[in-house]
Length: 138
Image (cartoon, rainbow, N blue to C red; front, top):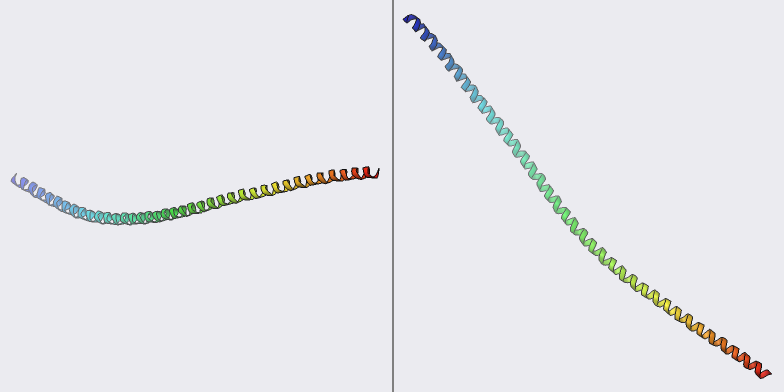
């Protein structure tokens, strides 16, 4: 029986050694996997950093575009103000031209009235002269 126990213990010892060697190989595999995962994590982290830098660059570009749009908007506001002032000047000139036109119309109307008045006077005088001539001949 001792022999049998000894054989069992030897078998058990050999199995334990096999298990130890399997555990050792699993440890080395796990270390390799851990190293590989660490490398992959570093690669992914580098990629994320690159993507983050690109997003920062895009953000800076958008800020630059936004600043340019603000400058263009300010320039359009300046141009709009200039157009408004020019438009106001044209309105003033148009009002003055309308006033001058009205003055010419009033002047022409008064001339027409004066001419009509003088024409009526001349006609009356001619009639009176005619009447006086005809009376003097008789």
